[in-house]
Amino acid sequence: MAADITSYIASIKSDIARPSRFEVSIPVPLKLVKYRNMSEQLIMRCEAAQLPAVTLATAERKIYGPTEKQPFKTSYNDAMFVFFLSGDMSEKYFFDAWIQLINPQSTYNQNYKTDYAVPITVTQYDVTGNKTYSITMNDAFPISINQLDLDWSNETMFHKMYVDFAFHDWQQNTIQSVVNNLENTGVGAAVDYVTQAISQGKPFNPFGTNTPSAQSYSMQNISKIIG
Image (cartoon, rainbow, N blue to C red):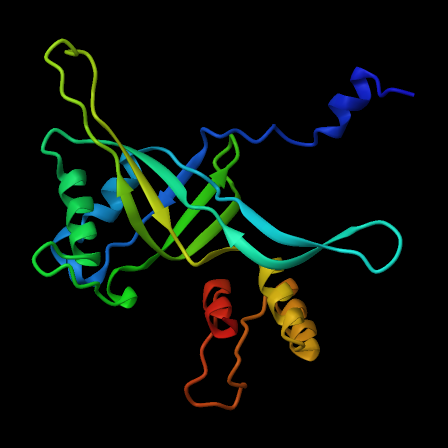
């Protein structure tokens, strides 16, 4: 029997997720230190972003019975962000410099990835401003910037810059994702310890309580330790 409207409404325990409630955090590479204030500015200038896709590449396999798909590789698509440009074109200057850092026109010698790749965080919020979902794109860097069309007749229009980012992979910024990482590495006892400590609001100290340099770790630091 088809569900009635009352059952449908009751199934929605909170507001529907909306694409207009998001934030993008893009750190500035260390070698572009003169643009150090750009990270905060880009948060305000980002008009559109993406929670990037993930795809399992498969090959067909048949032993007996129906043909089945066997996954053999995980692939991550590039992500596109859209930015408004300020009157001084400072965002354009920044991304031009980033592209030059990756592959300088003076030599066309590729720089090391550690010099230009950064972790980009995309966060989804609900209508009340609470964080509901967050991912980090690891080792991200721009690979293309769109052309900017100029036209005397477009007095009311403004520039938008479309930037494509490549990245190694992405991960959820949640407690559950950390626990899953531990489980996947076979650290069963650690999973139980971390889960219990977090649920009780206790600090997680991987060095032990008797270590002089012991410190409390946030979920971000735990993820770094695991990864």
